[in-house]
Amino acid sequence: MSDLTRLTISQARAKLRAKEITATELTESYLSAIDRANPALNAYVAVTGDKARDMAKASDTRLAKGEGGALEGIPLGIKDLFGTEGVHTQACSHVLDGFKPRYESTVTSNLWADGAVMLGKLNMDEFAMGSSNETSYYGPVINPWRRSRLDTVVMPTTHQGDGGFVSAGGTKTQRSLDNAQLVPGGSSGGSATAVSAFLCAGATATDTGGSIRQPAAFTGTVGIKPTYGRCSRWGIVAFASSLDQAGPIARDVRDAAILLKSMASVDPKDTTSVDRPVPDYEAAIGKPIKGMKVGIPKEYRVDGMPEEIEALWQKGIAWLRNAGAEIVDISLPHTKYALPAYYIVAPAEASSNLARYDGVRYGLRVPGKDIVEMYEKTRAAGFGREVKRRIMIGTYVLSAGYYDAYYLQAQKVRNLIKRDFENVFAAGVDVILTPATPSAAFGIADEDMAADPVKMYLNDIFTVTVNMAGLPGIAVPAGLDPKGLPLGLQLIGRPFEEETLFQTAAVIEQAAGTFQPEKWW
Amino acid sequence: MSVDVKTVKRVAHLARIAVSEEDAERMTGELNAILGFVEQLNEVDVSGVEPMTSVTPMEMKKRGDVVTDGNKAADIVANAPATDENFFLVPKVVE
Image 1: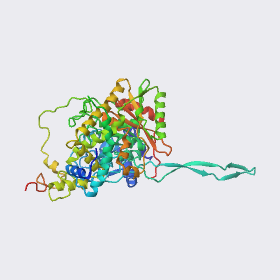
Image 2 (image 1 turned 180 degrees about the horizontal axis):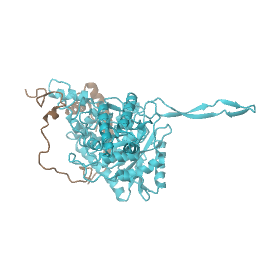
Image 3 (image 1 turned 90 degrees about the horizontal axis):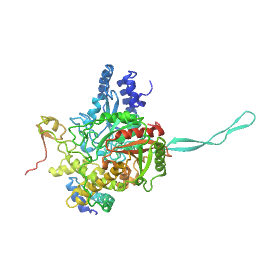
Image 4 (image 1 turned 60 degrees about the vertical axis):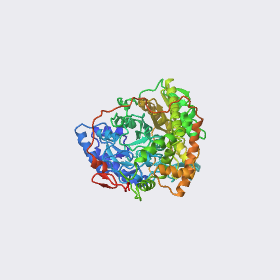
């Protein structure tokens, strides 16, 4: 039997419906792949094998009767941020030790209702705060992609016959993998690695400043952050409530469209979820983009951007132009202020959301001589450095005397960022094309980034504007850099026009192809 | 604006995070790097601009004033580190 884990969701769906394979076979293939790979990649923090087998069996019963749902029998990985009933849900933090919720998040409920199978919970940066998956209490996730180098190999000289014919006698080049371990990006690093390394058919993820799109770009996968309000946030551990959105990471554009259709819904339990029908996103794939107006924002051409990122962007422009789109230069003048405004708004909201981890209602408790000491010791032991840093910034900018100077100013700037986008959309631009990240994946324990938190924050420079304005954004793989690492392009759309993103991303995917890492694990 | 070690300790107490002398000193440097980075927001002219209050323009949904949930005391305390008969146990707070 060929390796079932190589099937995309759409391929597996067809084979399951045609009864060529069973959900149980598919699930077993993934469980054994996880078993073999997880010690090296650390993508899963909990594998729910028994639950997966039970769910697959139930799927097989439904499939046999021809009653399968949209995701019937499709094995998925779930980011540890999603509340899953009776199953490890710790946002990869020590402070939530042992937490097993008595409820199920709305997004995962939607997936199970459509027949999906849960393989386990995926590693992530602690409380989704990080861009490298190195802040996880469970240790870093390893990117299945490695740099490769071109080695020059001297060919042996061969003589043929007595005519003294000498062949080659020159050199040839061959690619070999470098051993250095790279980060998968973050915060949804476990999701991106699991999808890229064939350890699940697709994964849930969340994006507050780029946490779906940056890891997708670093692993050659497709990730979409839908419009704020498209997916319910109920049951997802909160980081920054006005920025958080759930979305899928998948192996291709079609799979991302299939997953988002099931994840999205209006939900009375999240008043910011939007009451509008969920379109059939898959139907947008393959529609021509002739006449579509694609905006190229000049502010995304940042100082020190590597040559290969600029080259990738130009390639993307050419592909869309060749497909009949009209390319227009646009300006989003407040772009450079998005990241600093984000580092006020997000920590402020986080400091408020994370106040609930007090050692009383769930998770870790470190005893103290009185209740205040108990709180302080619990939180000191339970939160990692990055989380503490953000809680401290948030507490400071919201403290008496500083609120106007920081928080209010940032929320005003945020409106200006949103207005920039509204102006270009009002001028007829349908979609905006930018690079997804300012670089390819970097090394584990990068010294520059460890020394300066702001350096790490700059990873989100192209993605964070989208969260600030509440817009949908998709990262789609578009090529490999000279070292053989994947790079992604980002498309930004009008609110609730995810279909345009899938339609346009599919054109890029068709031109660029899809990318799989060479297996070393 | 920048913070000193004393301010960092005060903020840590507000955030209920115990910090050692060494932590406070390290955090002072880190927080000042971040505060230095966000400083550039001051150069933006925001006169006449309202602060954002809602990401998507929408009317706030209101739900009916009816009981839709309840009788879940056991579920609510299920994950607590210390409980007694559906109460959360904490160190003594009143002398």
